[in-house]
Length: 119
Image (cartoon, rainbow, N blue to C red):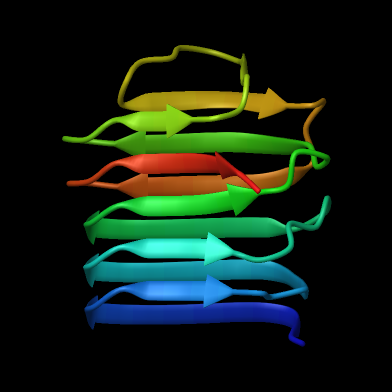
């Protein structure tokens, strides 16, 4: 049970966090590998997942609202949520909200896909 912040960084390898319940500030970065977060999303939390060469996946409960900023250079963004768009949207970049907003999600990858999955 982690309270507060979690920061993890890897040069070559996957970063995966599961069953985190009380962390408000998540910052995960890897240069070569995927990033995956499957923990509780707090409505006032900040979740930053970044990979240079790999997929970024976040599992989100359907009862939580969030603000989303996601960007990929050579992949695509795949969401199981209906995002209300604010600004421009493309297969590679999206900014918007789900269920009125709340948790701050910042998801980025240069060479990989971004997945927002229902939990």
